[in-house]
Image 1 (cartoon, rainbow, N blue to C red):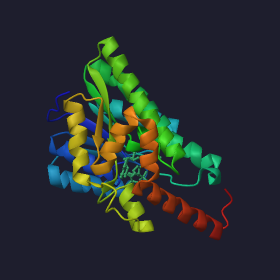
Image 2: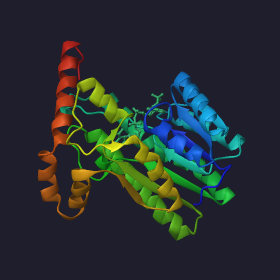
Image 3: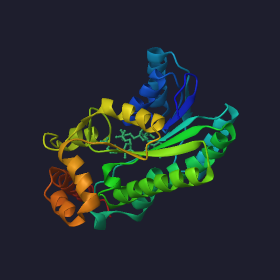
Image 4: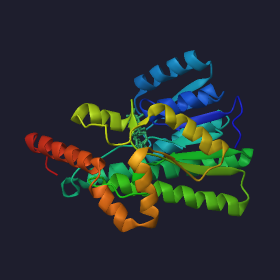
Length: 285
Ligand SMILES: NC(=O)c1ccc[n+]([C@@H]2O[C@H](COP(=O)([O-])OP(=O)(O)OC[C@H]3O[C@@H](n4cnc5c(N)ncnc54)[C@H](OP(=O)(O)O)[C@@H]3O)[C@@H](O)[C@H]2O)c1
């Protein structure tokens, strides 16, 4: 879909991290914005900055996308304002932990935020896009959506789910002759802001060998996905790029490479640290 000045994009998870950067790039292309997350104060700050920087109309909607009722409320509010042309399902939570130490509640919450929420929000906004005869949905998955990532079973499962959901929706769109389409963007490790940068700050993990991509590459990848109507777009560098390709043709070699990668060492270190913290704090998992 060609992006045209005056169209509107709804970006979830726009209170910090990748969502802010994606919203900024879309606004710079002339799109008005609807920013969604749970933190009202942070959203208002981002909205103020983006209005000043781009001159676009920026609306804030506070919603928890793990709540189906909140999604229904969001869809009603969007419909009252004339709908959206672009939906970026970006909100997501990372959850590196030893699998047998996870609680059922944490697993369910990860699935609700990372997978059920984006699917339900797409379901809620798609009819409006079909009525208006245009629209594009971009789901932000991860390299963990095409490669198994250790110590991240629920996260990886949700991201594989988003990749599958998007590919399936694209085929439905084509088989039905819709003028609405969908893409999935799979970042590797992104530096500067976002959940990986936060892991680096909190746990002191090194980025030297990990193939970290700059934050500034994420927004253009989203725009490329929309305007090129691309199925999967990877934002990766170095060894991760090879690992993704290897995963598709030689799963045994990819598994060995993943086990020996700095990424595995990092996720193990984060899971170990969280386990030690929760033992100290008496958390029962
Ligand atoms: N950063 C990376 O290196 C990287 C790599 C691969 C994939 N990704 C994916 O990129 C996306 C963005 O990640 P990020 O790095 O920007 O993470 P982040 O900095 O932790 O930001 C996550 C965003 O999601 C929002 N969010 C979380 N739970 C929510 C909920 N229940 N309802 C509504 N909003 C919610 C947060 O806002 P509130 O807390 O205010 O609600 C925040 O705006 C995620 O899907 C992530 O899996 C990131």
